[in-house]
Amino acid sequence: MSTTQTPVRLQAVSAPDQPDVTPALEELYRGFEQELLVPLWTEIGDLMPAHPRSRAVPHLWRWDSLLELAARAGEIVPVGRGGERRAIALANPSLGGRPFATPTLWAAIQYLMPGEDAPEHRHTQHAFRFVVEGSGVWTVVDGDPVPMNRGDFLPQAGWNWHAHHNTSKEPMAWLDGLDIPFQYVTEAQFFEFGRDELSAAERTTPQRSRSERLWGHPGLRPLSATSLPPGSPLFAYKWEFTDRALADQLAVEAEGYGGTVEPGHAAVRFANPATGADVLPTVRAEMHRLVRGAETAPVRETGSSVYQVFDGSGTVTVGDTSWSVTRGDLFVVPSWESFSARSEAGSTDSDSGGLDLFRFSDAPVFEALQLHRTRKEDA
Ligand code: GTQ
Ligand code: FE2
Figure 1 (cartoon, rainbow, N blue to C red):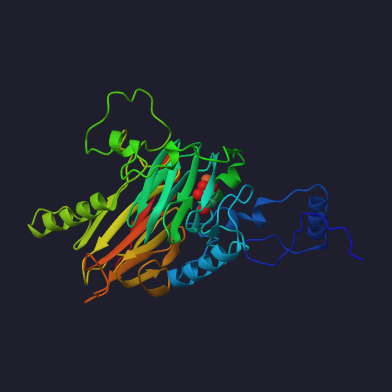
Figure 2 (cartoon, rainbow, N blue to C red):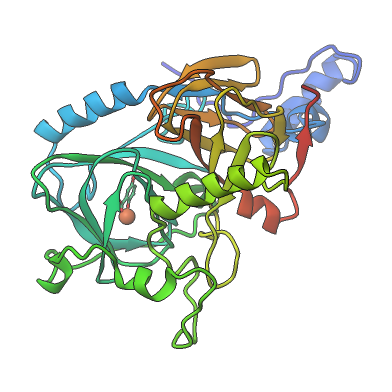
């Protein structure tokens, strides 16, 4: 038989910054427990630390393992109404088995079999897709079919209707990033089911979506756009453009005119073409390229990130942990853990010859709340 536990348990401890442990103190603490009260002096170290101490830990997931398990799920788990998506989330080992890569970010591998549809729905959670390999799936955003190919980044702000359909004869896997854990603590989420079937027009497979044709021209804003949606109106950032932007930064650097964030390190942020702001209200996304042999200076930042190796191989260091990484591998950088990366000298498994890293983070939330801090470590 268990006794009823009060939800507040206070332990009188003998420590320099704590009151003397006496019968009177014990009695006071029992009184606090009865009235559901907790004093600051026992909690302050945890609640108000000198610097962020993340509940999350650095962790690495190998793409090969994820893909193998996702393919097995493809054979035995149907996609349909209710479960909605064959998406398998990274669970940070110190977040209690919850499907949270970090305290704010969801990262999942999603898998669609040939000919399969994931049904239409919408939700307040902001989302994106990133494609590390494969093709053949169109994501239909507010009735606009958008192709997904290797290297493409596809943001989808909250409350857009969306469905996915695989038109090819091959299965396809991709990375989903959402702010599900962040919205979970806000307790402000909404979700709605859409139609069960897409229309014939939505099942077409154009190489460029309407969104790309309207918004995908550098520096040119359509005058027809009088009101703007909450996130980017551009539903696909094609690899062709991202790749060229990175290559051009490195070329400008090689000519002696700067253009990179540090030597041999090109980087771009995916931005809303209408405003220049982040693509999603709660999520920042970037692509980094390290030329062969280049390394980044260690940096700490408030807020957390998830990285996926897009191309090449190298070594990444998060806090005290280093990993050799290769195409598709995913890892987490918790708040205020230092991060650095090095491109493998002589890496040959890469189109660019270096290490390409896709990154997403919760930085827009921290910036909006004046909580964003960055500190360069001494290398
Ligand atoms: O594809 O709509 O990984 O709603 C999690 C929730 C994917 C999606 C996820 C979702 C989706
Ligand atoms: Fe969704």
